[in-house]
Length: 323
Ligand SMILES: C[S@@+](CC[C@H](N)C(=O)[O-])C[C@H]1O[C@@H](n2cnc3c(N)ncnc32)[C@H](O)[C@@H]1O
Image 1 (cartoon, helix red, strand yellow):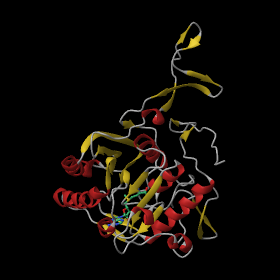
Image 2: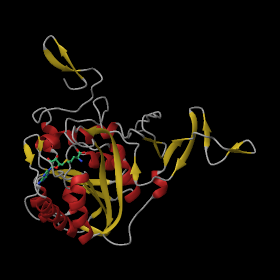
Image 3: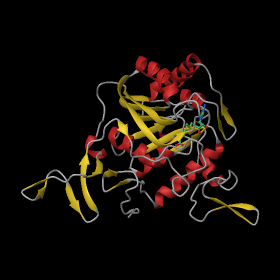
Image 4: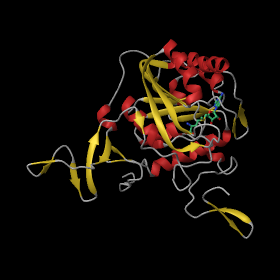
């Protein structure tokens, strides 16, 4: 039985602490009604702060204007995957490269000259994606996210990481390094004249705020007791998106996600005072994204990010709700 569910009088019910968002399309019809469909040429105004329901390849070709400051892409990886009825089939590297090039060519006309682009992948899709990205963009870095739960394998090393490629349209781009500092515990507190040297002494422990590297080992995948969790099979954590959004956009910028899933990019952008838009073809996921966007009106906290810094995994600062 899945974590967070119980068997009660022969019926499977959610445990009390299980916060997973899994309402049906019928239960969440009001969220679907708020989505937009793009049938003809459409500018930024109609899609700003909205979820677009549709096929990304059709929708992108109908959007007009250079309005994207930050593009975050979490496409289907090159794996057999069932996205609640929409099946993605594993293919050759060459065919996956063609698929990648198709969405990149469709989105390029919408990017501002100062835009940044982040693309998520596993180790298999990382190489084909990078080879296409370098044809169109300036690759700035490759981030490795250490997922704490690896995907099991008996005849190979367990897959415990994902890559996130960071690229830019030009050499002029936003990068707010001060906004993405990490709060690390100080193991060996060094003092000069009895005073902490480059660290802070607090009631809850000794900490130092440091600049982040391209190896991210402080982010958990969403799980059943977290308010952000949905039943989407490949949901990204808000903490991961918050790092990207804070570093590579400013308040009021437009953050766009062409494979939006359960809305993690949109929700995090909203919580951080950015505009958002994104495309998702599955009605079920649009409903969950809509529900999360509504929840963000009441609660703009991001687990693992508080007081302007990112906290180490499993250190839990006080959650402060929206004023
Ligand atoms: C890897 S998931 C993204 C998950 C997302 N980052 C999240 O946190 O929930 C990819 C998503 O792209 C959607 N998708 C795949 N092909 C699509 C297409 N042609 N148009 C629109 N959405 C598509 C799938 O339904 C799936 O939800």
